[in-house]
Structures are given as structure tokens and as C-alpha cells.
Length: 421
Ligand SMILES: [Zn+2]
Image (tube, rainbow, N blue to C red; front, side):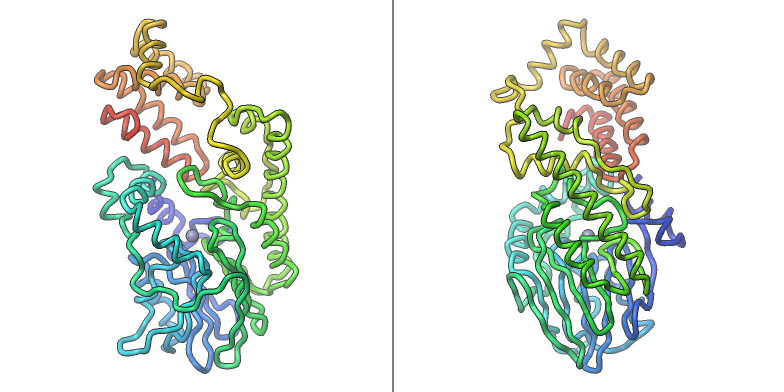
């Protein structure tokens, strides 16, 4: 299912039910403070000098977010803070400004500028991988329309900080703290007088997006430290990067922060123990780590998942080689697929066995054979269709949006007889 369909299906549901996919607002989280979400969340603190806005949504959804806020206040935006430079947080600010108002001050962590530059350099790549992740699609041209918003945002931060930053607007004090987590430019925002904490994507009402298979390095160990630091402040209300807010419920907020920290710490600890135990091949490590089970709604793998977080940790601490000798300097996949097909009697035989395995429930194993089948016989219609069906089945069996849509896009490629791109 496309991300947009998940959000549609969850419309009107409670934050606990909708989890990552909650849309709604404006919710009053404290006096003169409102949270609203369309895909990602935006928090507005009204002061006597104007609004302090935390995040700004995705450019196409920002007008709707701004309209929600304007149900509550007509005050101008005095200061904006970007919790990080992702397109769903730092690209929607223009929609919140009123005609003729002076440009607001914009605060962000210094590394955000390098991120924007990277997006410019890899615009088409980012459009393609987001088409897979959110659309389950192989169509880069379609992606161009829907996701190609990786140009530098119109309004760039003018106030950059490294570690911490504090300021005051209309008598209200704010603290901003850098914390490498989902990104290297991530920060969280604390307003002590209103006891409101804006976490950015440190909290997204789902397993943390700390593993994302197609994206650059993430930092689950610093992330966990940051969550513990936030917990020590004992906030009354929490405004997350995605999903619904927690309003005046400090006990629940403590649970969310500490449980999420513990979850990440357990994965980091087990992955490092496995790495230290003779540096086995990466795939073996993935199968050795057991993620902590949790029934809490904010730790369900509806978007990212533990297995991917393990991979992300291995990438940070290890080299690119996965430890399997043949894959240090491999043959081409096409040559390997042809050889295997020849041994077992052809691509159609591989595809048939893959279908049997899929029907018996072993989708992991089925997909390995399916890949070989498609790689050695991309022109064979029945092989392509069989492989597409296997990846559709696999997508349907995944609880998380990321794996679901990456497998969904694999089915698209197979249907078009293109093994991978
Ligand atoms: Zn986000």
C-alpha cells in the first residue's frame, strides 16, 4: 500500500490506533500551544511577539497544516526551528507566512546545510528511492512528480548552532539541543515554561526510523542517550515528529522515552556483541540479534524495523564487505544466475521452486531463488510474472511500510522484466 493509503485508512483513528499514521489537529498541548499533523507534525507556540514554529511539514502538505494552525491564531511567525533537514520537516515554511510579513528567524543545527547540498547533488537518486519507500513504485518519472522536492528549500536557516542554543521570544524561553539520531543534523526543542517537548523524529509513534535500508547513516546509540536526557526533564506534553501528541500525561511520556531508549540500546548491544564475536558475515549477525518484544503502541514495526537497525549499526562500525568470501570480489550476478539456472534446469525451474517455497510460507528463501530466476531469464514472461507474484505475497506479509513498499517495488520491476532498476 502506498504511504498515502495507510494515512487515509487511519484517518479519524486515535493516536494509539493510528500510531505513525496519525493525522489531525490542531490539538492544544499547553496554553497557547498547538500541534497538528499531516504526514509529519508541526508545533506552534504563540507568544506576545508572534509564533515560534517547530518544523514546517512537507511542501505539498504545508498549506493544509498552516490552515489548521490558523483556526487558532492569526499571529505572525516570529521564529522557526527545523528539527532536521528532511523534506517533511524543513520544506514547508513559506505556507505559514502571511503576505507582507518580515521573514522569520530560522534556526537549525549547522549540518543541515551539508544535507541540503547533498540533496541537490543526488536529487534523482532521492526521488527514486523515495518512490520505492513510500509508493512501492518503480516509476522514476512518476516519482519525479510526487517526490521530487529535493531542491534546496526556499527559506534557509539564518541561525546555525553546533551543540546547544537558547533564546527568548515574548517572554517565553526555548532550549534547542543537538542529538545525532535519525540524522546527523537532528535536534530537539524544550519550552520549560509550558513544559512542552518537541522531539522531531526522535519519537515517531513506531519503531524508530534508525535502520532505513536506502538512506545514509543513522545513530541509534546517541539517539538513546538523547531520549534519556529528555526524560530527565519530565515534560508534561510531547509533540512528536510523526503520530499524535501526548497531552499533559508525563507518566506516559516517561514510558515512551525510556522504553524507546531501552529498545535501541538492546539492539546496539547485541549487534556489537555479535560483531566482536569473530566478525561473522553480516547476514549471520542479522539472524543472531533478537529485538526486544514490546506490546506498546509506540514500539510497533509499522514503518522501520529492528532487522534494518542491526544493518545500520554494522555499517557504522564495520566495513562494506559482508564477510562472505565470494562476495569480496564477486562474479556478475547475471553470470552467477545463469550458472545456477543451468545446474538446475533453467530459470523456469528456479521460478517454480520459488513459488513452492512461497506457498509453503518460506518467503525469505523463495525470494533468493526468485531473484536468480529473473536475473537469468528477464525476457521470459512467465518467470517475470511468477517473481512479481512472489514479491507481492512478500509485501503483503510485511508489517512495516518500508519493507512492504520495497518488496512492492520489486514486484513492479519483475512485472516490467527489469531485475533491479
Ligand atoms: Zn520525519
